[in-house]
Image (cartoon, rainbow, N blue to C red; front, side, top):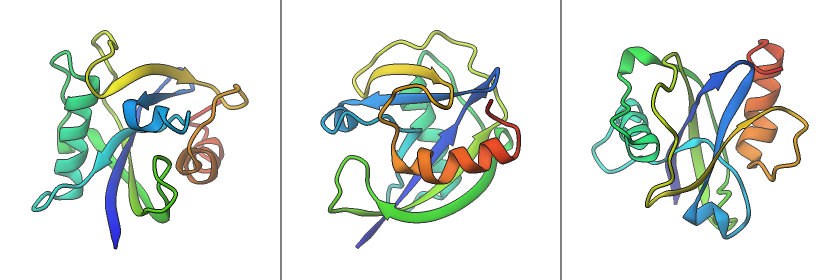
Amino acid sequence: MIQKVVGVAFIENGKLLIVQSHRSSKTNSWTFVGGGVEEGETLVEAAIREVSEEIHNNFSITAYDLEELFTFREHAASDPNKMIEMTVFLSKKKIDVPLTTNEEILHYHWYSPGEDYNISSSIKDHFLPFAQKNNLIY
């Protein structure tokens, strides 16, 4: 069974926000803000919910803040035995609250290409080539 997931790319000053959740810390990987789509949710609703849960501090986005970029399938960063179908969104809204750890997220980092972080293949193989080609990340 393929699980639908969403990833939300926040970019500021040419850097991408990456996070390490409790789950992804088990494989020492860094991922997008995002997660699984719950039953009955649209992709956009899932992205809005996940951002609220993972950024928290009363930060929220709306459908108007999201631009859908692309969808692909691969093995999950947190579980290589699980297949996911990820839809990546670009947030047009800047984060204007402190990034503080919570029950889901252990670490936040503003990532520049080439830094020594174990970024997920969803970022490394799918998002970074797109972002660099479109001058979103430098």
